[in-house]
Figure 1: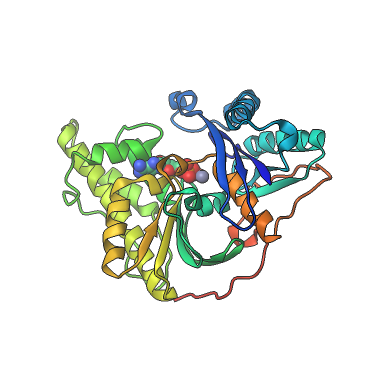
Figure 2: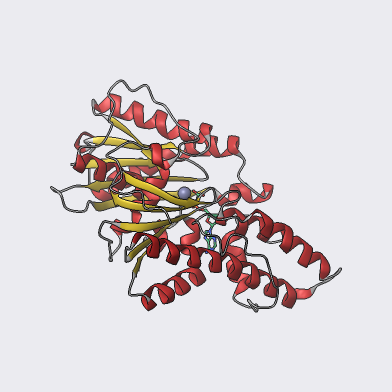
Length: 354
Ligand code: KG4
Ligand code: ZN
């Protein structure tokens, strides 16, 4: 079976084709991506209306390129999948509209996919795929969650942020330090030159009994420290504050992930979402998990941020298990707000919470 996947939830247009062969992990045939970062850079963040219009411009050329690269003809597509949510409503509607039109023309079903399920399953396309069950740390621009994953669709929420997401903490701190958008990677680069112990920043909920996170106080603390540095703080102080900010976020993510492994008794951790590209987070998670005999799995680097491959993959894995709610009425719908626990599928095997 061949599945076409379209991602358009935020500022990346992604299209990909995957093939399934029985129960085996689906294989990626081709993928194409267009990032809108350059377009939004002047505004210091994503402008939703511009994002929607750009998805319209990109999605068909990307689809044509992917089909050509894979050597797949349109009629060979069995299912058309798109990101149904969560994300920007207008941006999601572009992918949904194109997917439904294409599926209708081909007389094939469409399938709306949960964006975070895509992130969560993306390590299955890596050279070192995980096995179920595992703990997933989802860290993106809009979400910070720890889940127990027993299988595709079997998700139990273990903990989540009560305010800002980890990516948001990176982005907002980066903005305060004058690093612009997108802040996460820029802050990480600057942090390489700084001392992570230079500034003491708050780590709320670090020692709480649950697996929840709180990052909203961090940006205020970064702002306070930055002001204390005076009129012209210099590059050294900026790099030190970037390094200390990164270390604070990493410390909390690592500690809570290890606590989630302890609470569930599992020995596999999957890290997904844009922040999962952070090198320091990876290094420290690997080290801490190795110490307790646990393995950490990541998506390939290029699949850490938004892409079409993870959407096609999630659709294919649902289809393989017979839990895909495909539609043939082509009444495309999107869910800008959509908790992963409402995604549909069999119930979690256990809802282990500490
Ligand atoms: O998953 P993603 O591409 O989009 C969402 O669905 O949100 O995640 C984007 C987030 C942004 O907040 C970005 O700053 C962050 O991931 N990010 C990073 C790095 N690369 C991307 N944060 C820290 N270090 C990085 N290397
Ligand atoms: Zn994402």
